[in-house]
Image (cartoon, rainbow, N blue to C red):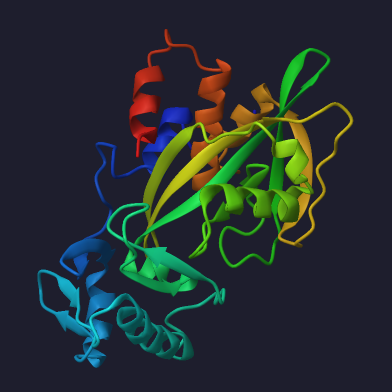
Length: 291
């Protein structure tokens, strides 16, 4: 029997969804305010580094506030870009993506600022992603298509992923992100996505070396036609394979999946009836996944 990192699926979700579990946060954090909204959470050690820019941040023991001039979306974005570039040059922020994400106090609310994706965990801002579980039937049994991340990825190298998953970049919608990532990661053309709608969302939140990972993932399911084999186009995936659901569960509790993809996969398993309402953990699984 394979060794387990988690005792069961509930154990995995407790690690992925610390905001909703009884474990609480694993580290002290300070709220980060912008335009009077709490938009992130900072490690105290990282907050101390921001004292280098008193014209941009008010840093005190209880909170950190962004004070940019001009106090506009563009002004806040420019001020943060200056800081983040310097922190990257100092080696504090790594894995530069050259990709901006939009930050607001709520999804689809007016944008407060944009920031480099690589800095999102340091500032503990809420990010958003579009994920897709790919399923097919083989000999009457349901299989899930899972991807293995390339070993050179800056985050979670060589871990298992959903068939498709990507961060929503500034200016893009959920649907636009899904279609873009579906082609790049799995060779799924737009025609195959006709009729695929967002089925809901899950929220993950957990501590990482850089700070706090916080993300809401909009979830989709796609039943792939017989004979279709997904093919990666962007080089971020080292392999894609079809796996029976029983084996997917084994790999989930073994800790082979990223926490994000693991949560999305469990959400999909619940829809497929792989965990029944009579299971003692069923309602707890649903509760932990709620945004």
